[in-house]
Length: 215
Image 1: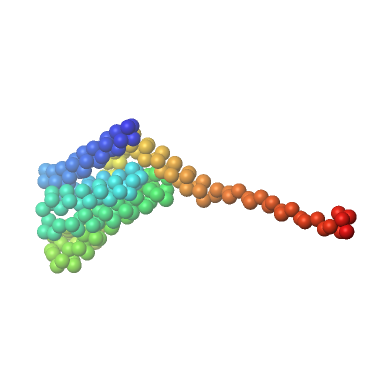
Image 2: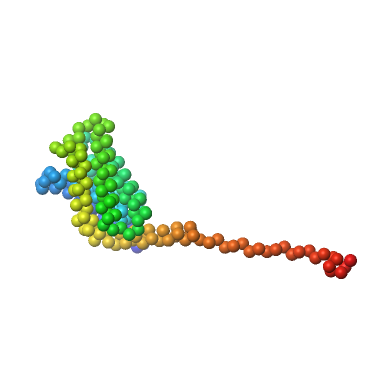
């Protein structure tokens, strides 16, 4: 019962984060500065879920929903490119969390940097393959400037955002860590489990009738 309650609470928190991220994606660009369009708030939420929740299905579902929200809110000329980029970023974050147990600042920075590069490069490739103008992605900058600004913007924004999300997901993140540790401990025990040695039970030797004095 407690497990289901924590799972429902976690899903609600993720949905709230995605909604807030989608609002930030639109409102900050319209009412604050056009330079903030290089920050992909939905991508940062996807990476956080992949890193800290330790649930690959949840990470992929979060990426899918975030991609749909990004395409709908941006009103871009093509659908599903953001979803593909987010799925690859979520898979990367989930694989990193499966290898590294203790998540620190360097791991976060490296994951956000790699996910940002994957995200922008996949979108640029998608637009190129479909022969679409790159203006919705690059604006007035060239491609290289767009990649660099997206990388820097996401890294700086992730420092503040992930600090807030740590407090917001404190209970469910701890549950994910305990689950991963228990799973890894079970795998280690299975890997190094020593099989019991078979006892050697020699068959009783038949006594020679000459030794027994019968002949």
